[in-house]
Length: 181
Image 1: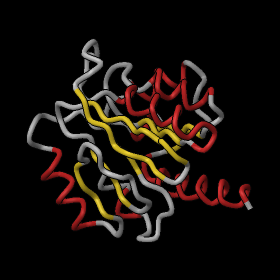
Image 2 (image 1 turned 90 degrees about the horizontal axis):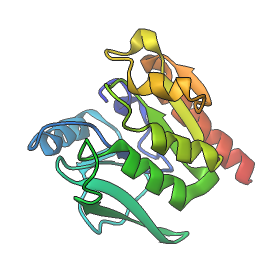
Image 3 (image 1 turned 180 degrees about the vertical axis):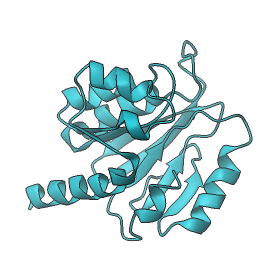
């Protein structure tokens, strides 16, 4: 995250929701450290919190994070231990499926280095809704597992090195903004 979040501008017009497989007790201090390094606000998400542009929300260890969008102008974080049948808690699939459901073609999913298949079904949901899917390339991954599964499923719109992910996120946001005008 240190290679991505500090490159995002303070006036970022979208929120960012992050699920990272981390042990209990690590997400809050990690978010606080990143908050000191970044122009955007970074914090551990809280249940019921209204999601705001320019804020990065980390799922707390031990809780799945999803979003609920009761209106077009209001999105809320929902934390839960359900579904219980997930290998990882929090699960990347859980957040991405909820983002796909809430934002449809306006959704964006980014899958980065990691072991296993968590995130593949969520990325497929975003891709099928017409959202933008971005994967980290093999050469810049510490573990080319999660992005590899998505690449093999042919659900990535673009694959780039870690260093180019911030630029691609901003490019996709600008494109979406221009298309809406």
